[in-house]
Length: 178
Image (cartoon, rainbow, N blue to C red; front, top):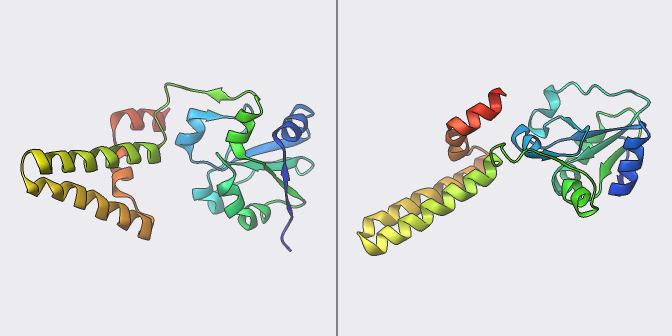
């Protein structure tokens, strides 16, 4: 039997957390969590969800969150299956929490999330390929074609080579080991 997932407003979540009756589980990736999160939230990335050991008091309300609420909505069944009773989700995710004016722990020195780094790098390479293709030689359009093909491949397979390369960058390795 699958447990129910009920949406709670940021104010309701804050009240439950302040009363000590709830635990907030953040399912975003570690790089996202390191950059900003709700104070007291536990990081349990969805990408390793099946291998994760959820350490929660059985009496506590389990509330799940992500950045916008889309990941938690898409993974309701997987999340609810890990909770004995009723499970909850933070409506609007971290974005909703911030919009409600509630406190967030932010580490501005943490690197940008890997996917944002991929977007910046891919966009920059496409623009560079177009500019060089017009200004220097048409062969440089190949850079844009290569990046576009890589993005299609990443979307189709779930493997992003650019993300893997960026994870090896010194600023990201330092964040992972910390």
